[in-house]
Length: 391
Image 1: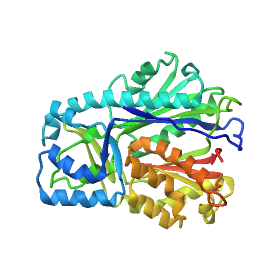
Image 2: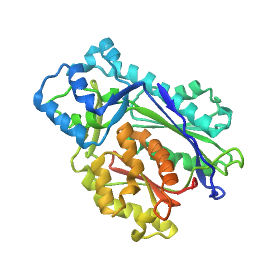
Image 3: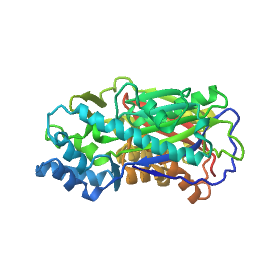
C-alpha cells in the first residue's frame, strides 16, 4: 500500500465559531497501478476469456470513461492463490471477504496516518471515528480494526457507515460535521476505504453492465480530520462545512442495485442514472445555495467538488447548470487519475480543488462558497454547502 502527503498553504479566511471545518486530508492506495490502455488485455488474460465482442465493448468503455490510471488490490499473485475468483458461478464470498477485510483496513490505516501527519496533532487528540466502506462485511467492523491499527483510545466514539456506495464519503462528512458541532472540542477522524475485489468477476455476455465497472472503478482510501474552532497556530482549516442535507428520490431504488451473493457483490447500474441526476440536481443545489442568498444565476460564482461517478454524470451536470468547464476540473482530474473509487473519491476531489483554487486567479478562481456533492444508492443525493478557507 502507499499513501499520499498533501501540503497546505496558509489561509487568509477564518472559520466561523462553532462551525465544523475540514482540518486535514490524507489518502492511500494499493501498490498495483493499472494503466487504462493496458487494462483490457490484462483483464481478459487473467479471466481466461477470449470473447471478441466483449473485448471490443470493454475497449470502447475504457476510452469513454476518461480514466487514465487506477490503483487496484487485485493482482496476478491473488489470482494465482485464488483462481476461483476468475471462474463463473463459484461461491467465493468467503475468499473475497478475507482479501477485502485485510486490504481495506491496511489502506484506511495508511490514509489516516497521512492525514494525522498533515493535521499536526497527536493521534491521542482524536475523540471520534467515522468509518465508511462498501467493500467489507464482518463483526466487529472495520472501524474497530482501524482504531486498533492507529492506536486510538478505547474510549474513542465510533460510527460505521456500510454500503452507502459512491455517496458514502459525503455522508460520512455530514455525520462528522454533526458530531463536531454538537461536541465542542471534539476531533473526528473520517476514514473511507474501498476495493473492487468484492465484485470482481470474469466477463459475461449475460452481464454486459459489469464491464462498466471494470472500465471505471478503482481502489484506495481517504481520510479527513473534522473539528470546530481550530486551534490557532496549530490547525489550518481547509473547508468550513456550513450546511449539510440528504435527499433520496422515491421509487429509484433499483437504479443502483447491489446485492451481496455467494459470488461477491453484484451491481447493476441503470442507463437512466445520469438523466435522473440531471433532472433533480437544480432543485437540490438551489436549496443549499439559497441558505446564504445565492440563486440559480450564481452557479459559476461557486466552487464545485462533485463526486465523479462517471463522465456522463459530470457532463450532464455541467450542461444543466451551464457551468464553466473549469468548474469541474477537480472532479475530472480525480476521475482521470484514480477512477471512480467510490466513497474515497471526494477526498481526492477536495485535494485537487485546493490545487485548482491556488492556480486560477480572479473571479472564476476565487470562489469562497461552493458545494460538495455525491450521489449514491437510493438514489440518494448528499450535499454540503461549504466555504473554501485556503484562498
